[in-house]
Amino acid sequence: MHFTKNRIYHHKTVRFNYTTYDLRRDEDSVNPEKRADVMLLSHEDDTADPHPYWYARVIGISHIFVQIRDPITRKFSDPKRFDILHVRWFGRNLSVQSGWKAKRLHRIGFIPASDSDAFGFLDPAQVIRGVHLIPRFAGGRTSEYMGPSISRKPSEGNEDWVNFYVNWCVRSVQCPL
Amino acid sequence: MRFHQFSPSFVDRDMFMRFRGGGVGHKSTSQATQFAYDDRDVMDTNNYESSDSDDEEAGFEHEPTDDDQDNQSHHSEESECDLDSEGNANDDSDLDTEPLDEYGVEGFAEF
Image (cartoon, rainbow over all chains, first blue to last red; front, side):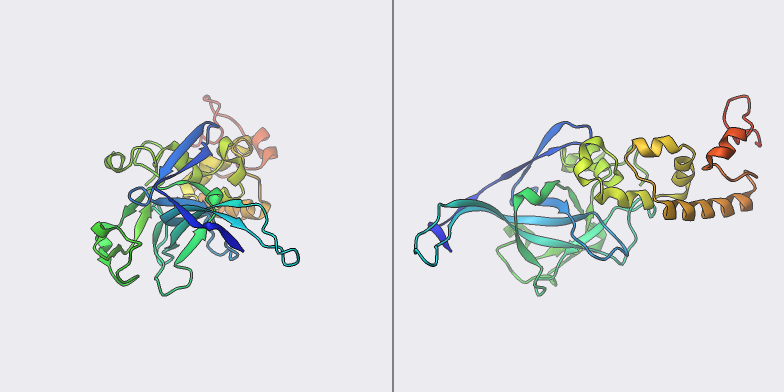
């Protein structure tokens, strides 16, 4: 396998198109500097406490051209483009109840960097849309999840919020929270 | 409205419906949002079961086991509160025979 010209092309932003609930088109612009959080469909096997979505913070956007060398003819195939999101995964805080019945927003937090699933590469096509996360201010910040890292913004001061709320419901007539 | 200042576009009716389930535009993820069908407040459950046709319009499939469970809790609550002696709001045959009050709302006359 060969990266064409040995290059990885980085991007500032990525935009996700999606169909809204009322069949309109909409677009979310996501970039690692601000508004970096996205959601995608979950792939969970256990059905004890199912949740439909996974959440991730985008820390890098890039594309590459990949060629594969044929083992017999030693010829490279045509370059094929792959779009890549470098993400830092959120995990769901299962110690608190959330959702409609509990009348609480879903609570998530970063997966500790010691876990092999803390970071990952993601096909942008998997992303449903951007998501707004509210830091759980009462929970404070911690450097427990990860030491100093370039995956954070300098303004974050090498610390993460312990938990975030997934903001799916703005206080309004229709919202029960 | 405080949240709007943080993010004008990411939190909207679409986001709400991602967690509510049943949006026509969300057909591709409708299986995943089935979870919202079970994640309901008791008060919502009673209202929900009073009209079967609405359930299907909203894109929810009937899962008989869940419905049975809900019905059972429904019954016990009603017998405790003694609001509705029939207690079978979900049963079509009972709906036909149940007397309606002057507003045309079944079960209302007991109050």
